[in-house]
Structure formats: structure tokens, C-alpha cells
Amino acid sequence: MADLLTPQTIAVAVLAGAALALSFRDITKFAFAWAFTFPIDVINGVPGWVFDGLRYGGAAWVVLRVGADLPQTRRPILRNMAILLAVLATIRGSMAIVNHDQPNVRVGLMMASGTALGYLVALRTKVHPPIITGYLAGVTFSASVSVLQSLHWTVIAPANIYGSRYPGLSTYTAVFSWHAATALIVAAYLVASRVRYRDRTFWFALIVAPTCLLGLVTNGAQGGMLGVAAATLAVAWTQRRLASGKHVATVAAGALAAAIVVMGAVAVAGIDIPSISDYDRSFTNERSRIDSWQQGIEALIDHPLTGTSSHDYLFGRGNRIMPHLLPLESAAVAGIAGLVAASAVVGYLAWLILKGPVDRRSHTIAAYGVLVSLLVNTLTEPQGPFMGVGRAVPLFLIILYACVGTVASGETTEAGQAPQPGQLPNRAS
Image (cartoon, rainbow, N blue to C red; front, side, top):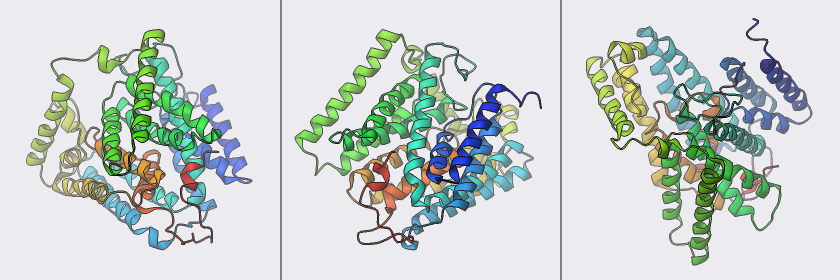
């Protein structure tokens, strides 16, 4: 009990209580504070379950306080993704019980509960703007910590045990990399779409974008950078017939500004970029990922019906890491059923991407780019962006704005309101 009653934990409890008190007057302020915790898993002196409790409890409170207003006609795609993830969670949890694998029982429970709450929150469009804003603010805070970690400063969360990876406030670099990539793409869209107005949204995004860019390149994981590259290519492809010379020049200027920010930070502040400073010319990291795929297949062959426990996979079989590919990771710990269920999830995401964005509005194209980045994440991180509320809520919002839209032309929400095109994602205040 004494370990729990630290000054840091007390401060977190006070802030959570203040947010809850504010929610009785204005639920949007609570939604902002709640979403701020999505990318925060580690702070010195605060047990990790405290943040889990804030995220799950906050999600339940939002669902209870705010009515669902997304029209029924706009829900099938979200519902399909929720069902696929619920099936995967059930299979993984069931096989974990069979294999006496407590960590994967927790994975199954977190995936199931996160999916249910993420889906329900996505149906409540009233709170989407403060959730988006709070999430961007939280990722920016975590990215700032990652940058300070790369400078080897003593901050509120440690670098990893090797001292050469900088996960910000996430549990490990691959998770932070996904959050930073998502926030960077959204912030870049907000900067581009609001530059003519110079409003609060613009200035807020102008802080978020370079901070997340620096955090992305300093944390040491390549998945986020691959996601941003893939998103850029996807957006360019969808807009190839509409792009003008002015658009191309604007993108080129933005890329040049980003490069200047990174190089300036390295030259002036001495920020460490592990992807460069610790680069292994023997491609050990890349080969270890490919080896993990082969090891996952071998585990599936040896245990086709139930898979094996994560402990046996890592220690009994002598593997260094879990397979960094969601279908093979699920196959290793849940057998053929896990392979099929996880492949269905990834396949559905791929199908949504192949269908293309639901319309050509700028915020839809930006969300579509993030969706492509999410698919890349499933190829570089064991469990992908599917576990827990902190990942499930952004996932469902991204699918909503990229592939569904909140309302169609002339349609109203169930609350009788008809948001203007782009209104929800453009509001950041």
C-alpha cells in the first residue's frame, strides 16, 4: 500500500478527480482529459494498472454520460471490425486458459473489453473532437519525454533497459512509435487544412507535428516511420488526379521543413537517433523479425490446435522475441483458430484500404492515411493496434472517418444534428 501512495500517484488521482468533477458540467472536458491518458503507460512511482483503470473507467463513464448518435446506417463497418476483434479475443483468451498462460489471458480480456468500449465510444460523435485533441496532447507529452530521454536527461519515465531506446511514456518503443506516427499524420493534416485561418487548431497542431516527428525518429523503433511513409504513398496515390503543382510544392516544402527540424535538433541539441547511431550493418534487427515469423510457424506446426504459452514459446523453445506479425503471433499462442481469426482482422483492414476512402474530403483522406499506417503496424508489432482502450478508441475513430463518415450528405445524427463536412475532426478546441 505504501508503494501505491506515492506523490506521483496522488497527483494522478487528484487530476482524475478534477476531470470527473468537471464532467458533470461539461463532458467534453472530461473526454479531453481521458484521451490524454491513451498513450501514457509508464510514469515513475505510478503503478501501470492506475492508467489502465483511468482508461477503462473513463470509457465507461463517457458511454454512460453520452448517448449514441451515429446513425444506424453508418455502423455496419464498425460493427464488423468489433465482431472480428471479439472473436480473436475470445479465441486467444480461451487458448490461454488451456495453456495456463496468464499473460495471454490478460491480452484476451483487454482486447475484448477495449474493443467493446472503443466501438461504443465511436458511436458518440459529440465527444470525438475533445478525444482527438486530448489524444494529440497526450502523444505530444509522451514524445517530449522521448526526446528528453534521447538527451539522457532524468525525466518522469526511464529509457529502456539498454539505455538506447526511448519509448517516451509507453511500455516499449513499438507502441510509442505507433502513437507518434498517428499523431504526426493527424497534426500534419490540421496544419495544412487550417493554415489560412491561423486559429487555435493551427497553432496547436504546429506544436504537435514537430514534437511527434522528433519523438518518432528518436525512439528507436522503425514501425512508425514505415507507417508514415506508407501513409504518404497511399494519400499521394488517392490524390494523384487532383494534385496540382501547388500541392506538390506544399508537400515538398513540408518535407524539407521536417528534415530541417530533425537535422537542427541533432546538430544543436545533440539528440540521439538510435536508427542512425546504433544502426547494425549486419541487419540483425531486420533478420530477427524474419526469424520470428519462422519460429511462429514452427510453434504452430508443433501445437496446431491450441498453440503454446508465451512463457514456453520464449523460454522453453528458446526464442528471443514473439513473432512480429499479428497472425503468426496469434498462431503461436492460439493455434490454427488464432491464425484464422487474426488473419481475418488484418484482411478486413486491408480490404477497407483497397476500397479506398469513403469520400474525397481532406479529413477523410488524412484518416485513410492513418488507416494505412495502422495496417503497417500489424506487420511490425506482435499484437498490432488492437489491445486495450488506448488503442481501440483511436482505431475505431480512424475507421469511422476514413471508411464510413459520421453522416452522409443531407443525413442527420440520431440527436437531430447534421455536422458540416469536416467539422468534427477540424475542431480542436
